[in-house]
Image (cartoon, rainbow, N blue to C red; front, top):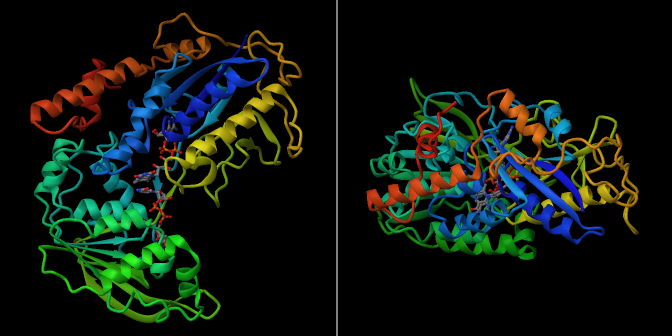
Length: 501
Ligand SMILES: Cc1cc2nc3c(=O)[nH]c(=O)nc-3n(C[C@H](O)[C@H](O)[C@H](O)COP(=O)(O)OP(=O)(O)OC[C@H]3O[C@@H](n4cnc5c(N)ncnc54)[C@H](O)[C@@H]3O)c2cc1C
Ligand SMILES: NC(=O)c1ccc[n+]([C@@H]2O[C@H](COP(=O)([O-])OP(=O)(O)OC[C@H]3O[C@@H](n4cnc5c(N)ncnc54)[C@H](OP(=O)(O)O)[C@@H]3O)[C@@H](O)[C@H]2O)c1
C-alpha cells in the first residue's frame, strides 16, 4: 500500500478535522492509501481555540476536545507540539520532509479600531483578555487586574458576548470550570459592576447568535438593559433594512425577540448590570494616565443603506475598554498571503501562488483559509473539502464533473508509488513512512532528524497526557471540578518533565 506523509500545521479544529479526514478519506480511495499525519503546533498543548478560546463556562462545547482527542490517538496521527513554523522550522523544511503540507494556523491577531486613545493603559484587545481567562501560555496569568467598575466591550459578535459574560457573571459560578486559579482569584476580586456592549449598527445587524444572547439574560444577579429606544427597527435606519431583516431572517428574528423583550422590562435593581447599546461608533478613548471615558458617535443607516455618523456624540465613563471587533490571520513566512483579506489565497483548499497557479503539495484549512468566521463544526466540512482536493491531486486530474483546475499534484509520489495516474512533479521518493524513532517522534524521519540537529525538543502526545493528568490532580488538590488549567508555560513544561526552552 502507498504511504503518504502529510504535515498539518496547527492542532485546532481545522488541523485535527483535516487529520481525521485524511485518515478516513485515504482509506476509502482506490487503491487505498496509508496516511501518516504529523500535527505540528507552536504550543505545547493541542486543540487551538477549543482550549484557548471557548469560554470556560461553556463546558459542553469544550467537550469537543474529547472527540478531537480520538483523532490524536489514531495510530496514523502524531502530535508534534512546541514547533513553530516561522521560528524553529520553515516552509521549505516542511516541503522537503513531507509529501504534502496543510496550513491550519487559525487567526490569532486582533483588529484595531484606529481611534485616538486606543493604546491608553486600560484599553485592550479582546484577544488579550480571552487569552488571559483561557490561560494561554503566551499571556502572563497576572496580566489583568479587574479594578474597573465600568467596562466597555466594543462589538456585538459572539466573542463580545463571551467577554461581557465572563466580566459580569458571578465568579463563584466559575469555580467548577477549568479556569486557572490565578484567573479565578482575579475574577473573584473583580470590581466590575457594569458592562456596556456597544454595536455600531442596530440589533438586526448584530453578529451574535440567539442562544448565546439569551444566556446573558439568564445570569444570576445581573440586569440586562437596552439603550433607550435603540431596539427600534426604524428610528436609526432610513433604508428599511433592519425591518426587512427582522421579518425575513430567522437569526435576526430570534435576536430581535430577545432584545425587544429586554427593552420592555424595567431593571430589577440587581447588583450588576449589562447594557446593550446600538447605533454607536467608538470615536475616542480619553483619560490620563489611563482610560476614563469612551466617546461614541451616534450612527444611522442612510436611505442607501450606508452607515453614517450623525455628528452627535456621547461620553460614557469607563475605566476599561475591550475591543472585540474580530480576529485576523497572520502570514506564515514564505507562504502566499492576501494582505487585504488576510487569508492564504486558495481554490477549495489548494494554495495558490502569485500567478494563481496551485502550488504543488500545499493546502490550507480553517480560519486561515476562509477568514475568522464560523463555529467549530464549520471547520469539519471545510477540512473535508481541503482533503478531497489533496487526495484528488494524489490520484491525479480532476474527477468527472469537477472544474478544470491547474493541478500539478503533490510534491512527489508517495512511498510505494504506483497510484494509477499519480502526478507527482518531482518523481523523487523523498522521506516517507514510519521512522522507527519511537511512538512519539514525527513520521517523517527527515523531519525528526532535522528537529534533532537543531536541538528542538518537541512536546509529544504522551507529554500532553501528563499535562492533562497534572490538571486533574490540581483540581482535586484545590477541590475544584474535574480539571483546572495550568496557568503558565513553565507549569506546563514542569508537568511534562521537560525543560522550558
Ligand atoms: C474567543 C473565541 C471563542 C469561541 N468560542 C466558540 C464556541 O463556543 N463554539 C464554537 O463552535 N466556536 C467557537 N469559536 C470559533 C472556533 O474556535 C473556530 O471556528 C475554530 O477554532 C477555528 O479553527 P482553526 O483550527 O482554524 O484555528 P485555531 O483553533 O486558532 O487553531 C490554530 C492552531 O494553530 C497553531 N499555530 C498558529 N500559528 C502557528 C505556527 N506558526 N506554527 C505552528 N502552529 C501554529 C495555534 O497554536 C493553534 O493551536 C470561538 C472563537 C473565538 C475566537
Ligand atoms: N459560542 C459560540 O458559538 C462562539 C463564541 C465565540 C466566537 N464564535 C465565532 O467566532 C467568530 C468570530 O467572532 P467575533 O465576535 O470575533 O467576530 P464577528 O462575529 O465578526 O463580530 C465582530 C463585531 O465587531 C464589530 N466591528 C468590527 N469592526 C468594528 C469597528 N471598527 N467599530 C465597531 N465595531 C466593529 C462588528 O460590527 P459590524 O457587523 O458592523 O462590522 C461585529 O459586531 C464568529 O463566527 C463567531 O460566531 C462563536
